[in-house]
Picture 1 (tube, rainbow, N blue to C red):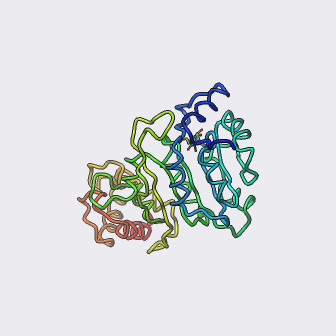
Picture 2 (picture 1 turned 90 degrees about the vertical axis):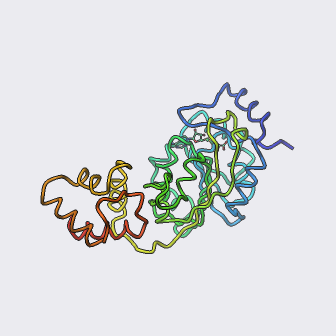
Length: 291
Ligand code: SAM
């Protein structure tokens, strides 16, 4: 009986065996705390019927725990040296497939269709590489996947931004994007000591559950650019951020003015004062002005 990968001694032994050390440029911090991994699997409510997507399996600590309970696990890893390690460490599990790729460049919907079939619902579980947490979340949410939940480890500071309230310092474009698709809850607080090497920041596992958007936006890309433009400079007024983005000539200014009037939004306020519903109204009003 071999011991789990998620163990401080075994993790270090695996790294030594392959002459590897954690790569900063890939955000490698390996989880060595089995309790936390069990907890993650529990929060994600993984059952024997589940198709699971993992991002960044590393040496396989989380993958192994997922493979023990899920139907199938599909994992995306950018680092070819990790992929080599995984072919050994995950050898006992025949329900895991590792794809060597940059997850940000993968057409997830297509791969999932190919691997799991047209109708499959998925769960997404990951200890994310922190340097690309936001782009990965954006990609997952915007890819229109059939997901039941997303359970991901990230920096505490980012986790706080996901479920912050209007008007607070942590409220911003990321909060709104996530809120459009999902309800976010902070599920587990994780100390730096749970990893090898320990990151310099606190971590947390966030659980996202899907929400039917209250107002369906017809062009989601454009909607998020309105949000992004509004938060371009946090300390500037909405008006200033808008003219910065859309242009300063009089015709454009008049259109922005009209749109703000239609949406009943005061041009002098800051974006952090607007909730999701107001942003959808602003988006619709700007569209009416062909902006
Ligand atoms: N899942 C492992 C664990 O919990 O111990 C490792 C997690 S580590 C924080 C992040 C992993 O993501 C690393 O294995 C890293 O090589 C991988 N990674 C980094 N950037 C990636 C990318 N763009 N696409 C796929 N994997 C990536």
